[in-house]
Length: 393
View 1 (cartoon, helix red, strand yellow):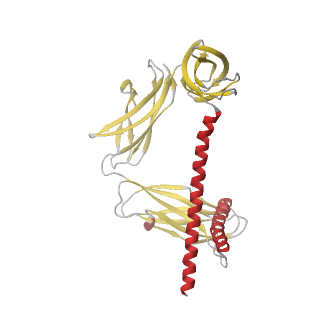
View 2: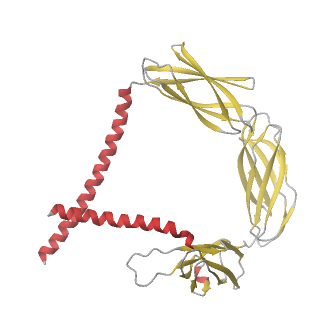
View 3: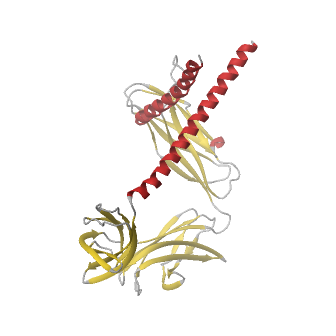
């Protein structure tokens, strides 16, 4: 009897999960049955003002459908849509409108709401009904009472002694329109290696402009650099920064790891980083040493793209017979340049590795068993409670 009750309880857990997964898949397959436009609106805040926004609902399905309009988000209480219900034939579209009645005050910055349409629940259906819905995002931008801007900066990777494009996007969030000019510093760590100034642009309140300027990367070393834009206005400072790469024909050896077992073909994982903006062919040589005695070498040719960091796999076809500590000498040859690095690695017996793997597997099995026992415990506890209630009755 207890086993039957246990099976019933397990089924009662599995069935809802199955139904949820089924409904999720069904929803995904029906997303395209409803459409709405535009996908987003952005309006400026005006205290106490009203503004009407036009939308279009589209039935992409093959059967007639009825949709209800709705609003959600922090501005939902200020938005009213009409009509509340829209009936559409297959492949038919219809317009509706929403009126936003601005409050007398909102905190400075962007405020969000979503206007949506959802398929109306059909009559005479069971408890589970899968409904399609789609939303359009609405942003109300509120200016700051004094001068305030938001900045973004982007810089293209480049070669040494060649120009790179710097773009600074500035949005004026303040109530004051102003002429703006952006100074930009190029940093290598804490050292300033370059300065550049954009042209001057007049940016009206709640408007956005992009400053474009070229800077020649006349630096000594390839590597990662930082561009910092600093706008100072009325004793206020606004900053934006980004990292970028200045390249030279340099390939860096980032790391070397290995997977080796006595008497078996092994594998090296070699990570290279290119500091050049174009693809480079690299000859990679690996020599294995033990106690400073060479045990063999191998050379392979690879290609790496500009400013790419890539993992290359090199198989060691001559099995090493003994467990222990070894060294791998890695040599790179490219464009008449040679680079060399030495790495330590270890060969372990299969048994040592299996012990670690088995420990992980055993740990996972124990956790799984504990979860099952916990589930069974709570199910049994629930059954016992039901039985006590029946006995009391």
